[in-house]
Length: 216
Image (cartoon, rainbow, N blue to C red; front, side, top):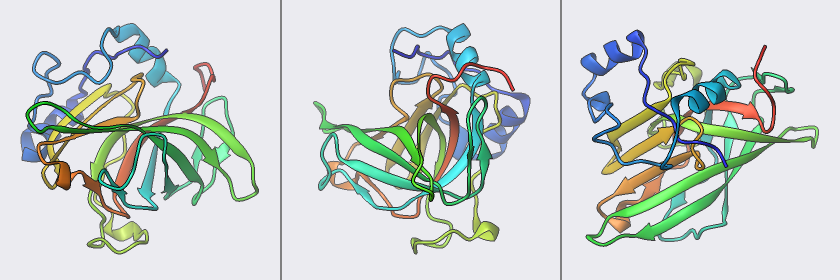
């Protein structure tokens, strides 16, 4: 089982936090809900060293009212990525994940956890992966499916940040992501009916071949 990270912020990312209210929510592990209790910073840093930045967009809408744990979702990579100790994943590679958790808690809070597990290349090859979501943004073109490179608004993972907690990352939805977490990312909403990720939503990822060791 993968370990829980301790929060690390680069100087560049900290500067962005000061400039953008979107990043103002709890970049402090003491005030942030944990996505995977009991983690060490050493394990998180070791995991981060195995990973490279990637960007993808959701192929299908994820609606908590219609999807159940175990159901698959898909995202398409918007650019080619060379995995460390793994193959190149070309642009348009499909990343496949599952709904890990979809539940209501006391007080009306709804939690949706996602977990990526494999990459499907156009030639039919399947690559087992681990991918942590380190940023989320609405579709760049207002919700229509398709990737417009000029319209993309999500910054890639900087290779150093180990944890991200954002209030209102999507309309009415908070997001929590961390390197080395069991889940790729956790979304929290106070309204069950509002737990929905639009088709075409942008994802900034930290990705690695599953089981690959660190190194270039």
